[in-house]
Amino acid sequence: MIIDKLIRKIKECNNPTVVGLDPKIDFIPEYILQKNFDEFGKKPKAVANAFFEFNKKIIDEIYDLVPAVKPQIAMYEMYGAPGVKAYIQTVAYAKSKGLIVIGDIKRGDIQSTAEAYSDGHIGRVTGKGLDLTVFDEDMITLNPYLGSDSITPYLKNCKSYGRGLFILVKTSNPFSGDFQDLDVGGMKLYEKVGLSVAGWGKNLVGEYGFSSVGAVVGATYKQEALNLRALLPNTFFLVPGYGAQGGKAEDLAVCFNKDGIGAIVNSSRGIIAAYKNNKAYDENNFEKASRQAVIDMKEDLLKYLN
Amino acid sequence: MIIDKLIRKIKECNNPTVVGLDPKIDFIPEYILQKNFDEFGKKPKAVANAFFEFNKKIIDEIYDLVPAVKPQIAMYEMYGAPGVKAYIQTVAYAKSKGLIVIGDIKRGDIQSTAEAYSDGHIGRVTGKGLDLTVFDEDMITLNPYLGSDSITPYLKNCKSYGRGLFILVKTSNPFSGDFQDLDVGGMKLYEKVGLSVAGWGKNLVGEYGFSSVGAVVGATYKQEALNLRALLPNTFFLVPGYGAQGGKAEDLAVCFNKDGIGAIVNSSRGIIAAYKNNKAYDENNFEKASRQAVIDMKEDLLKYLN
Image (cartoon, rainbow over all chains, first blue to last red; front, side, top):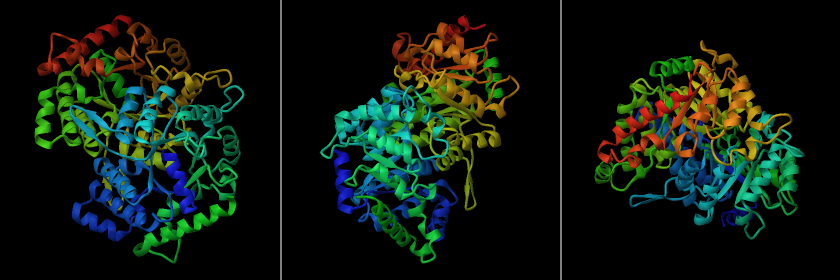
């Protein structure tokens, strides 16, 4: 069960951190970018290649410190087909280093379309003699707005191939309450969605009492996170919003149980672009700045856990 | 304004139909598939190339009859980078034939991520001397669950580059009511989302009184469509669910105003795989079956409009 593997890795690293591999062109050191511009021209392929080189150097520096990475597919998709190739290469490279990969794809569609996303990302693509593994993430994020039949095709692949999901419940952005905080008769919409997530995951609960179907719960909303932790005892949380978005360790500690288990906290910019905000580092050792940022984040989180 | 262009093309064709270019490997004639397997092996690239060839033949047969096509990106994305390339090629080819292209991508994410999707799909990708047009759809579909700040980056590109959006309001799938039909204090969630969509689009209303920010409203829910048509007089509807999903012309007619304007109806399988259900055609003239299916659908819709 992938959730057990994730929890074991969190315990081994003593670090409930997932590193968001969300590269932007402005984060990439000039020497990496220029080499690729020289080789491929000012084309999507140059940026995509630079992203993968950048990610590889970061992964090499952090894979012994963190249990997981979370590439955000939008940052790659915006460069078209070469970008998607760099995303897939990043997934494969991170897995080769023993990391669990959470693909932040936030897909959501009707059943026949969900089957296509599910087979492409966490299943197998078959038909006419083909049997392909395409994206191959361990876990992916999903959007619940279309309802339960938009989720079932993923549950099937979670069971067949030992994969997992994190479904949006209460997101970290400033206006997440526009719909998520609406009162739907005795509870908020995000709580109702949370209960559905628990239901979808009830047959995928592992040895630690958590399901491979988890929830996305923003670090920026302490009271909501507290409500959800009480409401959903078997649901593991993926917690975005730490650092650059304003979420603080002392607030997001409510996402964890008393034993320090129950959530994994994401940081993206704060780690992968750490060299931009730390005068001890520059472009030539950006990956060392990322390593130090992971260590600092771990210490910050552990102060408030246990 | 893209919505004006769409409405003008619907009037010219006298046909409020959008053809869903959602290829599946089982839809592709053996002679196209085998040629690509012979050239590229049983690889994603072979299927992706076959999809583009299949789409081109259909586009060539229907571009004079319909105003728009709607490729569903999931069907391409499941084949990885080559699939995304075939999607982009399909968008470009359809536009070269004068069709309006609605990219069915249903993305939804926090603001910084939404900017990446928005620039990649309907804007320009810049930075470090780059200025790229990547996906280049005329309009795209979006998911509203994350709230208003997840939509604003797209509104900016709609204004700058004359693009449009269709935002999920009431979807066509059987369990769309799980959350969308919840009572949120005097109205349903889908109505509340619909009012937000109207608000997001209020500065993008064109000469026919409709906004370039439209709503997705399923053909399979007549009463809900009727409510929304009354509630959202300036919102154009993209209506999925006709045909294979069970939506009928007599029911979805409520999505249109009395002048027959106000919506565009999608059919995917019913048109692109028409040769499978019509004994007058076979693999060797599948595109002619698609042309006939478009003509039949137009007649069916027009019976109930005006």
